[in-house]
Length: 463
Image 1 (cartoon, rainbow, N blue to C red):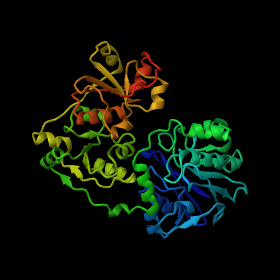
Image 2: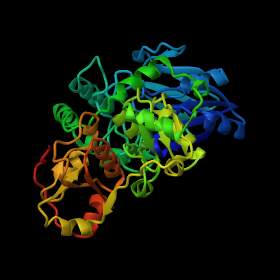
Image 3: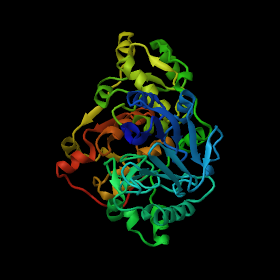
Image 4: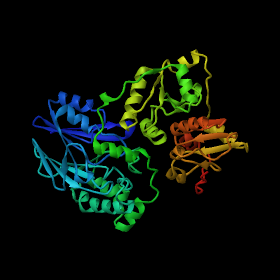
C-alpha cells in the first residue's frame, strides 16, 4: 500500500493519498491540486477516488478541479447535500481499492455530515490500520461544534460525544489517527504539533476524551470557543457547490503608484505581505501588513472578508503569486492586482513613506513607568487568562474585523501578541484607523516570559 500525508503549514491542513493496484484515493484535497497529480505520476497511480470528510469551513477544497482533471469520483457524506456530482456516502459504506479497504463511519458532531474513514491494509492484516478522522478527532483535541446553521453547538457537541465514544474509540489502541488539521487551526483549541497519533495515545492524553459524562462534555465543548471567522460559513458553501479551477481566476494586473494612490484615497485596500521588519522600516501609508511568514490566508480571510479587493505589495513577483494562491485557498479571489515595483517603486515615485516604531520587552518594561504608555494585548482569551502584562487592555485581533479598540488615538500604544506576528497586523490596522503613536513589541509575550518580567492573571479588561 502507498500512503502519503501532505501537510500545508500555513493552513495547518493535512490531506492524504492512498494507493494500491495502480489506483489512488485522495482525501480532503487542498485547492491547488498539482501536488496530488505529481505524486500519482511518480508512483504510477491513477487518481480514481476523492473523499471529503466533511464540508471544510477554513479552506476551499480542490475536489471539483481534481475530479475534472482525473475523471475521479467524489465521495462525501449524504448530510452534506452537495450540489456537485458525487456519491452520497452513508454510514458503513465500503470501497475496495486493490488491497486497501476503506470503510466510512458517519461521525456527526463537528458538522452534521462529518465522516471518518477507517483504512484496512489487507496485505498486512484484516484489522484496521488507521482512521482518517477529518475534524472529528484531532491530536489532543476534537472538532469545534459551532459550524452549522441547522444545529445548535450543544446539539452538535452531543452528537460528537456519541460519535467518539460509540464509534471512534471502539477502534484498537494501535490504530493510527490521521486528522485533517494540526496545531494552529481554528477548527479546534488544543491541537498538538505532531502529525500522527494512535487511538491509545489519544485515549490517554486527549483532554476531550477524558470527559466521560456527556453533559459535561457538551458544557466544556461549547464554552470559550475561539472566535469563528465570518468566512467559515462562506467556505463551507463554496465546498458544497465545488470551487472553480484556479486556472479560471482572472490574471493579476500591475497597479502603478498613481493608481494605487487613487485607490487608497477612495477607501480601497493595499495589503503588504512582506515581513514585519521590512514593513516597519518603510510602507505605503494606510496599507495593512499580513506577512506571508505566518497564517497569512487565515488572517486575511478573517480580517478582510472574502469580498475584499486588495492590491498586493511585495518584494518580488514570486511572492505576489504565492500570496494570490494562498488567498485563493481560503476563497478570497478578488485580488485587484499588485503594486508595480513594490515599495521601492512607491518611494522612487516620490510618494510619502510611513514607518512603525518597534521596541523590545525590556524597553517596554522601562516605558511602563510613564503613564502615557498604554499596552494593548491582541492575543486570544485563553492566552490572556494564562498570563498577561499588568495594566494591559485586551482586544483580541479577531475583534478588529468589527472595530478597533476604544482607546486614546493620540496616546502611545504598545501592541503585543504571543510572538510578534499578530501584533504587527494589529499595528497596521491601528495606523490605518488613525492611531498616531503605535508601537510594536518585538518577540511578544513569549519574549516577556523569557525575560522573567512580571505577569498578571487578572480577568480580561476588554476595551
